[in-house]
Length: 115
Image (tube, rainbow, N blue to C red; front, side, top):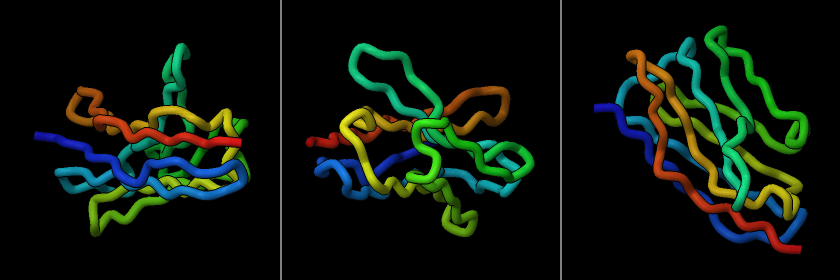
């Protein structure tokens, strides 16, 4: 069974940093597409950062230069380092792994950025 467990959310003042982790219950490989999404109150879930199947990282424009996605295949873990946080980054953050013809999500971790 595929399970994703996020951790690392919290509250931080604008300009601060947070790091998120997503531990996967199965072995992940560099060619696995994996990403981070977020959902703010009253808004649709949106893509934040993703590793595509070729292993390249892509970011939504609003986080470019501030967020960094990384992975440790040996630990089956996906990371998101968030720097220079802004109040508009406030959301529940989810990691995502599309595999075995299904779309797996973690339970989400709350990030609150206050000014």
